[in-house]
Amino acid sequence: EAGVAQSPRYKIIEKRQSVAFWCNPISGHATLYWYQQILGQGPKLLIQFQNNGVVDDSQLPKDRFSAERLKGVDSTLKIQPAKLEDSAVYLCASSLIPTNEKLFFGSGTQLSVL
Amino acid sequence: TQLLEQSPQFLSIQEGENLTVYCNSSSVFSSLQWYRQEPGEGPVLLVTVVTGGEVKKLKRLTFQFGDARKDSSLHITAAQPGDTGLYLCAGSPWGGGSYIPTFGRGTSLIVHP
Image (cartoon, rainbow over all chains, first blue to last red; front, side, top):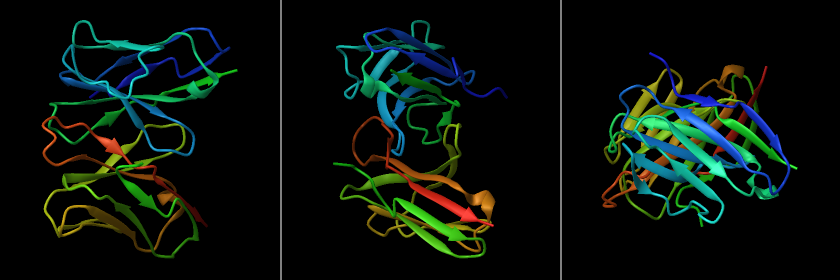
């Protein structure tokens, strides 16, 4: 069974530039999560999708971050414009159903904002 | 304020030693999960504890869920270098409707050969 796929693996940009991350969850998983993990900290939930609808985005900085999951399968997270404090690993995870506590994570995208 | 507080934040020990890490909250959880994350990778689920007072064993790892379902611990017996990693607890508070998983800050464990 293929795992959660994320790309790119690494990204280096300058502040005020824009960047996009892509995630393809495990086939058949209805729920998709984007987490931000700053060095030395645990993952912080940015947005949770159930199919193509948003379950929670209370911690997403909506003035600069956006995410979509148009067909209920893969998802894109965008930052525009990026700030220095956005430097982090962006993790995508999926689960079979919303009440399933078992999350499967991708390897993440490491973003450096200079 | 973190919903889930983990301690200690860092732990550096020698191979063969025992250790315990803690995950505490003032909220009640329907379940708690423990993940291990290695450098450059995403977290991988180790176990889910569901019942208050429950104890689960996974080889040398013992997980316990507090009676009040507000805390959990992970005990490792005879640690090995392969146990090195970031240990994260996660859960969604009871009665929230949707399952929205929140993570603690993690315990970074280094086991020296």
